[in-house]
Length: 157
Image (cartoon, rainbow, N blue to C red; front, top):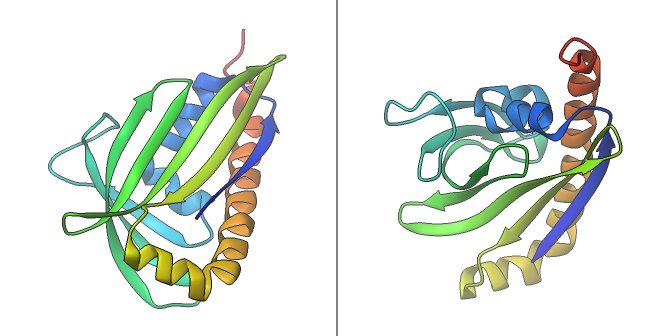
């Protein structure tokens, strides 16, 4: 009930982390979450901060809002959030940034919370949803790469 995809980006980890951790950028990168907004007066990332994403499932629908809470926020190293439904944690999305030569290797991953509900869901739909998530992570990382590499030269000295 988990998977990960990595990509090499010709930009430093801090620069890529800033793109990813500003959740208002999510709609430019994700094939499913087309917008996101900070909640509770937050204006930036920090552990415990909440935000919500507007999701169009599988790029077709249904469309809904998901509330998320940041659970890891270390500039240039890691950014992670858990998707919630009320008080229930459903899924953790994580980005890990590793220095790589003059750039970064970025890994995006998801891990469903281990519960009877997610086990049933994964048993019935996991094969298809897993493929959708892998393809979505590849698309997201390719879009982040394009953005980071397009601006990488302007932030280097």
